[in-house]
Image 1 (cartoon, rainbow over the protein chains, first blue to last red):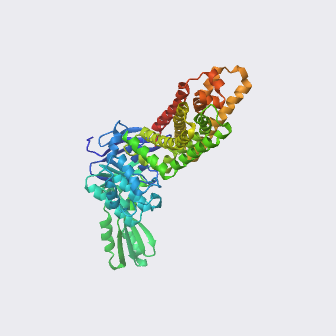
Image 2 (cartoon, rainbow over the protein chains, first blue to last red; image 1 turned 45 degrees about the vertical axis):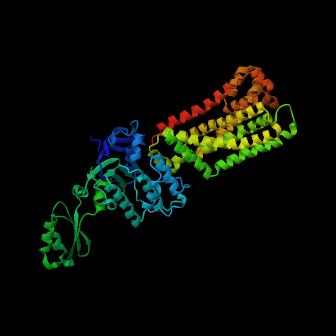
Image 3 (cartoon, helix red, strand yellow; image 1 turned 90 degrees about the vertical axis):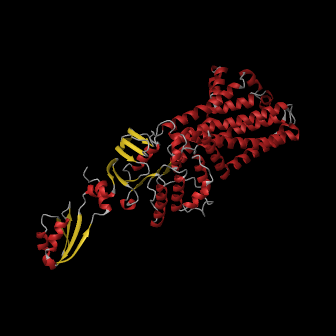
Length: 308
Length: 274
């Protein structure tokens, strides 16, 4: 376990009373790496982030953030280099954006001179002297990001950072995070939609009921999920029977509409099926190939019914 | 230490922003001025100085007002931040939990101290200027101001304890109100009842111990009996002589009432799992 690793969790479990919210999670985040933590509400994402911040102590397992235990004496000082954006961030809303960020900058031991510039960068330049009470959801979230970005963090922990933001704001938000990432900050962000974090992080980890059920690049997850590619074939209604027999044994066939059959192909049977179907010649009117969507892959891991 | 000061500074700014500081100063000043100038009328010019009269009057009202103001400042301090969700972000900063509590305490007690200094101080200066000046009276007036801040500190600490124990803000508000009622009214009523019913069964020593066990009574002793001139005005000179309470015991009692709840708050907060 090297000191350069931003996050290293080993067998981490967390129990609140009888409820085991996090179970034996192993997770690593290298320096400068980015990871998306996915899972339904209640999957344990927020608890895991709290464990990393030392806000709650794990019931079992080992936690190291930049090589140090969060419960260690002096970890508090390291927090000056960690940026955290809680889920549904709340501020003292009688303060103005500038007052709030000044307060947080001082707490992190940073010069307050960076405050206006930082607010400008997240697009709150014009609103910095308005009270936070009057801020919209998007503005609050950007203020939240601004406080997380204070003091050149080595690690950013963003808990469902883009919930409730419109697509344009989402994109802007991720651009700001990406900019920080290019400067070498490790980023861990949680979300409940795979489509949202696609291509935004190096790796993706999926949690279900406190357990880490998958972790890897999107390509790796796609392979591991083994979701079927769906092939929809439209043929003359009279030819449907022939179509079904031709493809028998290759993929599960299902009649979705009169004259329209859907095949679910797993593990490289796709080309075989396509060859057989095209051999039917003019009986086939149309072929549509639907690769597993991100949601299919995500559901595969996160659904209750999914295999262990 | 720096984090504590930053947190204290924030509480003071909050107090200024939401007019808490202004309101407290005005209520203390109004109380002190009206007592100083209306209160001296029926007494006329007694042998006791006007400042001593003011101490007797003011301290018997402060004993109700100060705990109420301090509890109102403190009951929300922790549970409010937990309930709104601002505590989570704050604790993710390079701040320890005890720094959060001490920072709030420092900020709140500064607000109370300024209110006492400005409110009671201005009335005291006016009294002294209008001819009521005497060295002994000035001394007990200053002691009254200092002990009023200490009384505020006691109820701030008790308020934080309520705030760290309560699960919701509304529950904390209820507990704070109940605590105030008990500490400033019910306890003394019970003590009085005990005296009436028990009569001689209660020794003077035990009675004094029961008085010192209450921070508000310790404050009364300090200001009404502790000083001979004031005791004369308050009609408690005999009691003071009999009890023979020194100035240190009530101060120690009040410090205890400040430190123990504050420590308990720190310990409970430290153990809280977020």
